[in-house]
Length: 318
Image (cartoon, rainbow, N blue to C red; front, side, top):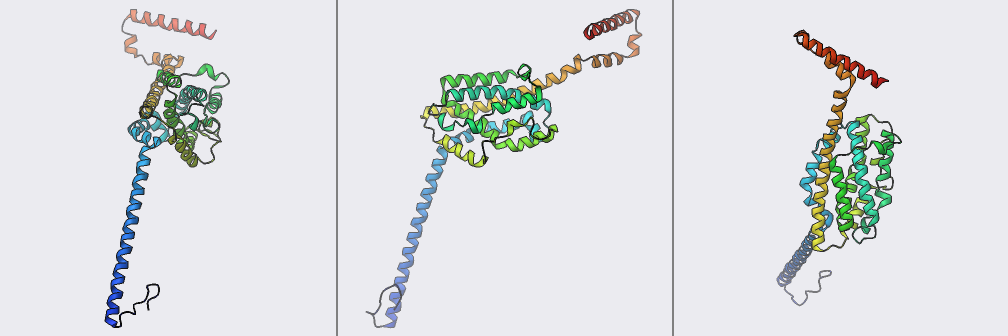
């Protein structure tokens, strides 16, 4: 008698009984194999379906189409300075000026379109809004009259113009810009904040409010929530393609801003060297004596030049 398998008593012969038992065993193994294969096939189908769903997620599609642009953005001179831990105070201050302009445009358009079906699911002002934090940092570095001292490159103005334009004409495109900026800042916020603090020799959190997200207790969990909300946005095929194109544009606009800031920084760094009194006096002392002694006329011209400079300095000091 075999437990759980039924009786084999109709065959008195021990040999026949063994054969029958073996046949049932083979059938049982074949049945198990079939069930196993069926389970594997079902699991494979489920995995394929899951992959197809992932491919259709808007967040994954944006990540895919902006891959090359993302690499280029990370390799701009400004971002490399951050990555190498060599960001300077002038670099950071100019970056804050542009971020203020960009976030002012973005958040005003997000607020104005907060009830739009494409914007509402990803509207998290309490958790993500950056404008007030940037204002705080600008006041720390520039003083109470910081608004009068803001300098931005033309690329920043173009970026802001684009945000205003789509806020009026294609609010669904704001999804691309919000995802690019907010999740990018949230992802690298704490790391970049520490790099900036160390590079610029800042004490405490003063001047680094931009990197802090007090309304987000867990960045990873929040990013999962944000992507889930973003993937739930209902878009037509045309609108979806438009959002993907806008995501690429968002990266390109940011790259242009980074490059523009670096060019602006080069100009501001050179201005003091060419305009300062110290530089003028140094250059005068470096004129070779052989040239000064060349002709009486040249000596007279140089004398007049020095006299004019002296008078000018006296008037300026007065």
